[in-house]
Image (cartoon, rainbow, N blue to C red; front, side):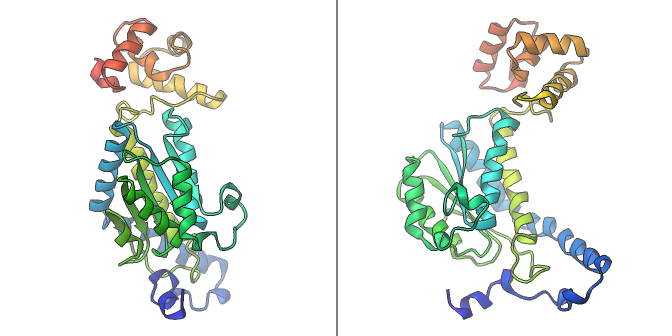
Length: 298
C-alpha cells in the first residue's frame, strides 16, 4: 500500500485533540480518551440500517443450517475470534456454528504473523478449508477497509454463493465493494494515531455484539431477556442457570435446582418443564416442535 493510500484513511489521520499527547497529564489524557470513546456508539448508530440487514441475513443462514464466519487480521481478526468463542457458552451452540478466522492462524491471536494479512489467497484458502457452503454467511472485518486477506475471503465466499458482509472503519471502503452488505463506520482519527485497537476496535466489538446476539435471539436462544441456552459449565454458571430458571418461572431456589438436574443441565428444558408441567421428554419434544422458542411452547 503506498503512502498516498494510507494518508487518505480516516483511521490513519492525526487527532487534533491529542497533538501533544506525550505532554498531557494522566488526568487530561484520560478525560480526552473518554470523550473520544463516547462518540463511538453514535457513529455505530448511523450504520444501523446495514447492521440490521446483516443480522437478518445471519438469522436466515442459521435457519438454513449455515454458519456465521468472521474473518480479519490483527485486532479485527481477534475480535471476530472472541465473539465466536463466546457464543458457545452464552448460547449453548456448537463451536462450528460461529467461527472466527484470523490471518496467520490461531498463533496470530497473541503474536503478529508478518505478511499474513496481505495474502488474499490465504483468505480464500481458509474458507476452502472450512468447506464453505452457500448457506453460510461470511463477515469480513478490517478497520482500514482494504485488507487483502479479507478481500480474498469475501471474493471466494461470493463465488460459492454464500452471503457476504463487510465491516470497515473507513468510508468508502475497498472491502465494501467485495461484499453484498457493506457496514462502514467512521469514528474519526484515533486517540493515538493509527492505533485501531482503540475507537475502531470498540466500534467493531459493538457491531459484532449486535450481529451475534440479535441473530441468536432470532433463532430462539433467548426467552424474554434471559439467555436460556447458557451452558452451566462451572460453579458460577450453574448458579446463573438456576437464577435464570427462577426469573423465568417464579419457582424457588430448591425447585429450580431440582428441575435443572432433571433436565440434564439444560436450562431451557427445565423452564419448559415448569411452565408446561411436563417431564423432560415432553418438554424436549415441545421445544423441537417450537423450533427452540420457549414462548411458542406455552
